[in-house]
Image (cartoon, rainbow, N blue to C red; front, side, top):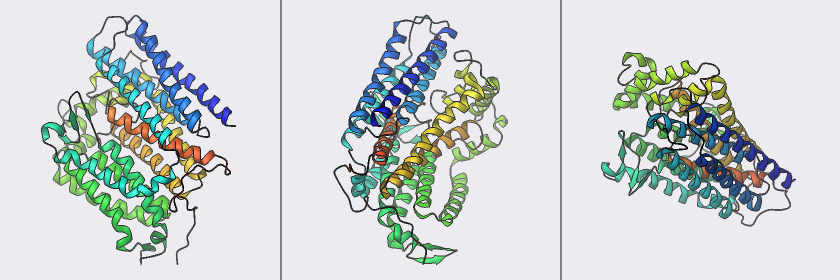
Length: 458
């Protein structure tokens, strides 16, 4: 059975490599570029990189879900192709096989991301001991969030947001890794106090509110993290963390009342943010009517809408559109670039890939036998779903823009590294979920090893 799963994974990786290589060839042909040896080296390096990841899974997580890695490999590959295509359009290149610095740097970050993925799979042999370090992960996540806030603006601010740590030669966005650490913390606390959330406390509006001392760790972490991100004007990440917290609390308690309370808090916070922050007002106005200032604040959204309109149902074809007219097309608005050149059909296919990842993550949460694994896997899958919704909703004008990046596709090293760590945790939990019951891995924790229970309200 294990051999069959790994063979399926390797076959799917080969298919992802084929699609990525064909996409690269189509871009080169439509941009009138002679396909030089660099393109074949790129394809070979891409296959070798994910083949190494496959070998690591085969050796250290042989029961893992065989679909997770190939789907991410395809998303990452298509993102690299689009960034390469945008580099060609921006630079007006004519030399054979030339690549712009963005595509080159993104490939290096992909190498670092896959390396981080392999390290997590190798050294985190069992996800359950992570529950013992829940508070450590929470403290580390809050520290990572706070570092840019205390740094000078010259070392942390870009485009009005203090979310970076600039080092010689590169910069990182610590909030990307902090969100994963905070998810581990929330899962550990909810598992440890799950009875308190469903039976103890004050009865109010048809549900039991936990005692303050039981709710304090979660509320403190949520309040501090959101307050820090608001101070750094990183409201998109604050919304992502808040929504992820709320989803995990609902999954742990099955109480719709928590969702109602969360939505009321979100509505109140939105009104406050609208009146306190000028850039929030600008984004809301651009969402309502971007054509009110088409050459100024609304320019990015207007160009995005033109890109989708130009693409239509089937798109202009890879390399045949003008996605570079959208500002920050390789990062925040990469979905607009795909919408123009692949059309509605291609965009739907990309969203289907994300849907497959989310569904496999939720399926892992259902199958895995320990409560901590269930909550952590569900939290990781929900975070991915919420981020994709916020990104695509902002780009398509369904909701105001949030400034988040598309997982595994957008340009940016911090996002790639964090999302590959997220993938590694999902792979590790799926390995535990599919492993025969008679082969438990070493390392037990009383909290994480507790079985799933359904607790009735008293």
